[in-house]
Amino acid sequence: MQKKVIYKITYPNGKIYIGKDLTNTLNYFGSANSRLIAADFTEEQMMDFTIRKQILWESYTDDIKEVNKVEVELIRKYQSNNPEIGYNLWPKFFPNTLIK
Image 1 (cartoon, helix red, strand yellow):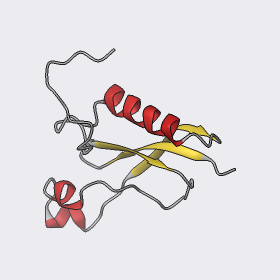
Image 2 (tube, helix red, strand yellow):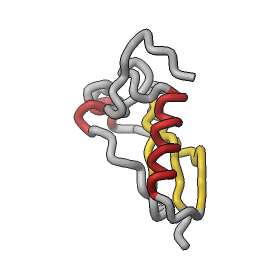
Image 3 (tube, rainbow, N blue to C red):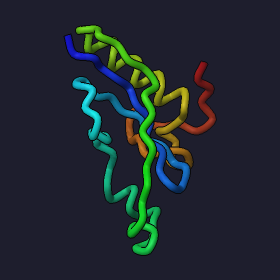
Image 4 (cartoon, rainbow, N blue to C red):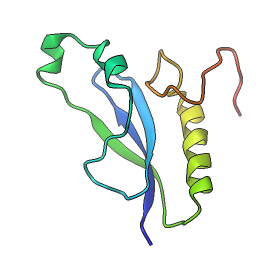
């Protein structure tokens, strides 16, 4: 059974992206929108660019619905779908919405 992970990517500007990897591949860094990220950096900043990947959750479950649920929970918890905080485009961020 393959380990599944939910990870957080932190970019040099402090913004984050949260995603899932169903194969736990070391060099997989998600499918964040490249144009959206590039718009936040100058050409000079892109010449020396370091990101950090942290595993927030891991499981050997075969239940993909559980993995998807945890991913959404963590996106909401960290507010990585808030354009001021992160690069997740889904689920849609609604300002002034209290998430418990």
